[in-house]
Length: 71
Image (cartoon, rainbow, N blue to C red):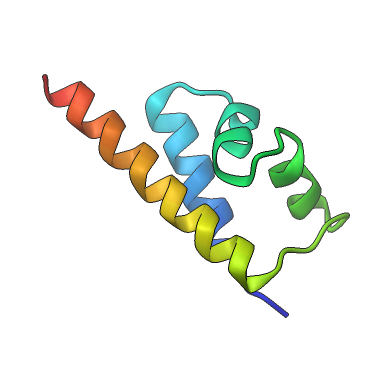
């Protein structure tokens, strides 16, 4: 089983910090606005490849946001 909980915590923290809706973050990193909610509720699973890609997308979102905030 893939441990996706750290990704969910990061996504939730980023949504709170940035002011983005969690569904927006979900759409950007998992290509589905409902996927984070489904993972949290246990209605969905995630493949390791997808988890890795989502983590990289979240890294980029966080970096872009911090870069824009610093400007």
